[in-house]
Length: 95
Image (cartoon, rainbow, N blue to C red; front, side):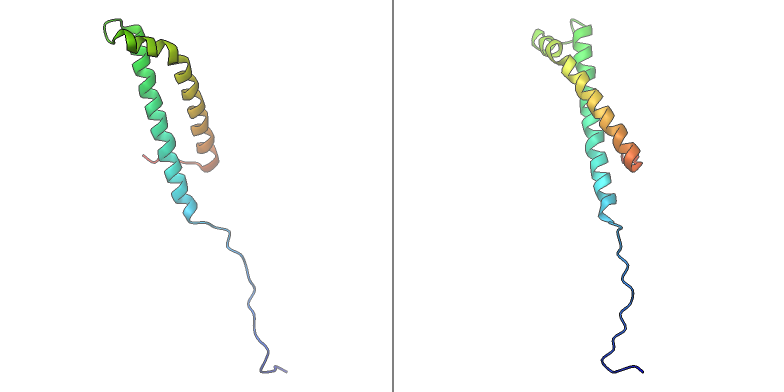
């Protein structure tokens, strides 16, 4: 017998999907790809400044000589971060 005060409560199933994560992944992929491009350009400029004497001034060659190791380290760290991010979320750099 059903009383008027009885209420039918449906089963509650939580929804663990978060649609904003796709947007965060795209933003993160743009940031990682942009940083990688900046470091790659810095690496090319530093290498060219050291390889070709007439290409850059003494000040630029001094900067390149002092910082090329740090640029290599930054490129390695960013490359590893890009690889791990791609492996975890299976992204394509947003291009």
